[in-house]
Image (cartoon, rainbow, N blue to C red; front, top):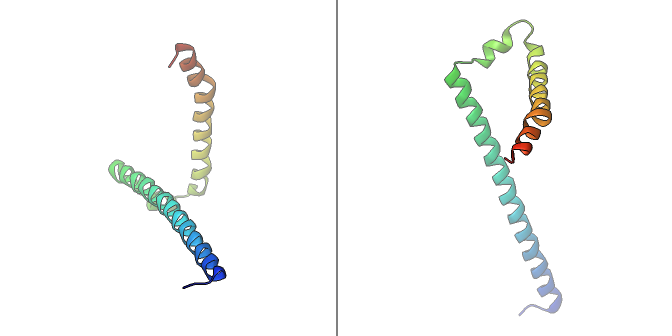
Length: 92
């Protein structure tokens, strides 16, 4: 039979193992979500016939990510300033 100190150590180890299991489950869920999102983007790029490698080999392609971020930021601004307030007024 384990002494009091050994029993406490076993309980601490069991608690740590449970915490690590929970952390592992959260990490696996986040990883699975990231993989699913990447697969979704890949699916649509394939469906639309977009070859990112060929696109990025073109001159000026290094500016493409900044342009996409700009367009996305503009869309977010329009939505937050126009669409969302309109929906709120309509009660949606």
